[in-house]
Image (cartoon, rainbow, N blue to C red; front, side, top):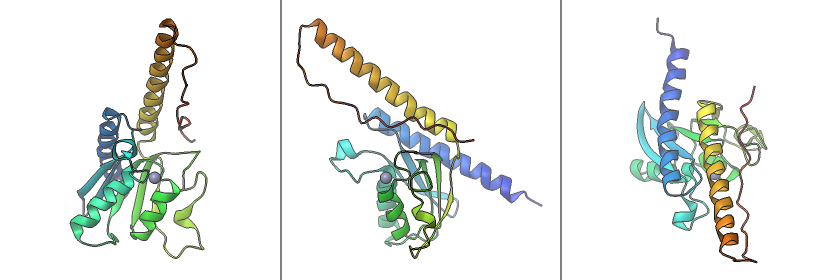
Amino acid sequence: MADTAADDFLADQAFMRLALDQAHNAWLLGEVPVGAVIVRGGQVIATGYNRPIGENDPTAHAEIVALRQAAALLGNYRLPDCTLYVTLEPCAMCAMALLHARFARVVFGAFDPKTGAAGSVIDLFADPRLNHHCAVTGGVEQAACAALLQDFFRQRRREQKSALAAAAGAGLVGIEVIELDAMPPCEPRP
Ligand SMILES: [Zn+2]
């Protein structure tokens, strides 16, 4: 008999790696590296990566980008037989969008202790006051998903430091320093 639990685990890992590829696309464009894929019947039907800066759209999180693509493809605003894989725990906006779309299941990689809405700060997916619930699995490929974010912010801090040093060297004083919207490192959970 096939070990379905092990098969599911391997499938989750494989789809999360595809979501990680999407996250790399975000990094290449200077966006916080978060990626998502939507799977239906074992097939990837939509992909998305974080791009609020490039799109001038604060809602352009990876999950929203992917779910808009999937809904358009299927010609349906509800996606009840789909699973969304995303490299970072969804925020409240994305969690509610996924609940509105009636996703069957959401799988995420790194936990987000600052804005995670799948258990870290709040758990909208399991809130008994909301009329739709959705199966959630967190921590899939967690180390790789968290490392990507940590590397990105480390590089940004380095770049900011050298820009400041260059400005100081050029005698530019009093330039405005814009604080990075620093995401906390996503510490792996025990
Ligand atoms: Zn979000």
